[in-house]
Length: 446
Image (tube, rainbow, N blue to C red; front, side, top):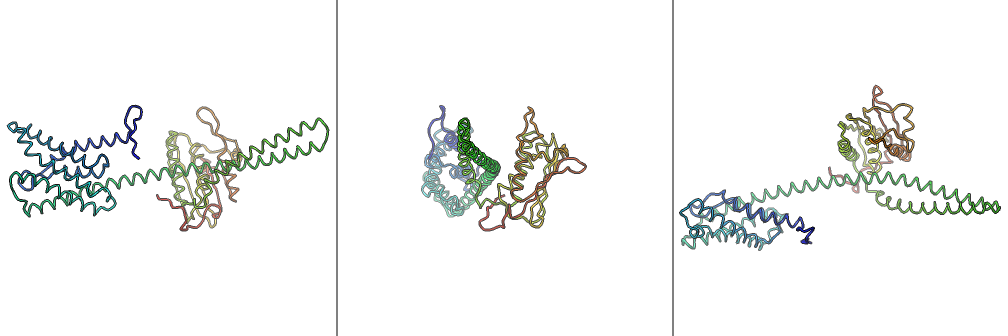
């Protein structure tokens, strides 16, 4: 549905753009028509006006071709008439108009024929589109020649028909080639935009996956608290003394409140699980690593850091679960980006070692002191602070360790070469994050 309503005192932007393109067509066709030659040694000219008009008709769906032909034909006629009078001062307006008015019927016939065959239905059939374009140009040329020859009483010769046919073929397929190039470029741009949006969505959902793991842990804790509170209530009730009855009721109330929190969290967790637990969400591991590197290059630039990223892969990998792999690897790379100062380098290695996949992220930052290397995996512990002095959440590495151990893997941290920088290594069983490629595999178009 076309929106034509007014917004904040102005036209809808899309409609305004269409009118601007239409006005551009009315102006550009007469100007392009001045790049011309005369193949028949009479008043019939061949110019770039027709290819320009054809291209605009293919491009624009507004207004109708008939209106376009009417206005463009009038614009070309009056432009050429005025130009001739301006150049030849002795030429009268009447004589100049009689000289150029047949071109009006050329553009009008062209537009009417374009609308009659509904040429815009054949955008996906270029050969048919080109042949119909040739036919339309022949019909328009015939209309102009008939108007010119009706005055001079000349006859359209076989040679003239051949020339019109050849010129029509050349101009129509030239325009068609240009039009298809523009469409191809637009398609590639749209594909690139879709790819970027998909990558952003994957990263967003991988972050939700992390939150779902933390939420699942919270659910488990809430269940334990509710059970312990109810156990305390039963113990207090069994003691019978009057003063303990109030405490027993308080314990029961706490158990009920925690149970309500648990139920609310369960509903949230169910929604997140439905979003991120599709079995078909598998991708080539190389593509996942590529997404992580590109997103963190942007993140580093946003922090004003000059970081050189490098990637080394070794071995054959199965399709890997998108959100598990993304969340683990992205956490390590983000941690490395934030650990570096103004400049540095980050190297990501992915290797296949028998039935295990090894992720290694190394940076040349300030490193982590040996006494802190075990503490960094404790939830809430952090050594990173922003420019305002606010600490980081301290959740990322704790999540990495928790999720890695859940997947029966290991995570290690060590100093880099010459005690410079930090190296994180995650080793995971292949069966925990990957599966062999199949017809139902998630396909990633790079």
